[in-house]
Amino acid sequence: MIRGWMLVCAATAVLAACSVRPDGSNGARRDFILPGVGYAVAYHRAVEFARICHTGGGLFKHATITNELFPDTGEAYVHVAWGGGTMPEQINIKDAPDGAAVSVVNVDQGMWDGRELDAATRSLQSGIATCR
Image 1 (cartoon, rainbow, N blue to C red):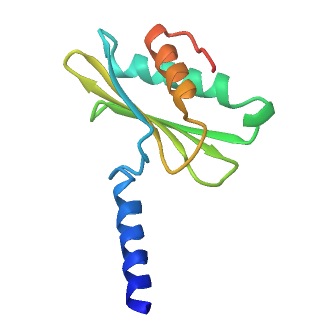
Image 2: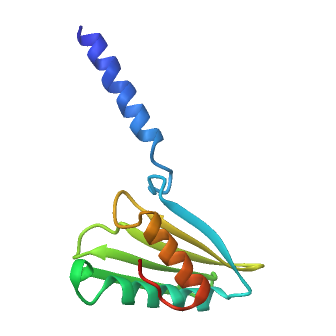
């Protein structure tokens, strides 16, 4: 009986580990290219989206936005964290030959459901922050 229980626990742990991507995104991730847009412009669009849509009151009043631009490597990030806690949302940007390569990632859990991923994508593509 104990061996059977241990087998069930081990199988559950293996299945749980397989459900999370190596980047911790738990499957909620959107990757896209912004054609003709440099990574610095994409970075500024991401910062604007995060600040307009995730700070200033309501549900998101305790969100903290951290961001950094790395000109020497052609990379940038914008991270949204809840009140000094975990960092569940990330927008990672890299310079690419065709434009800026963008990944919007949900790490563990957070507000990045399909509608939020759509809003982030629209905002970065258009340059106008569009909240969900």
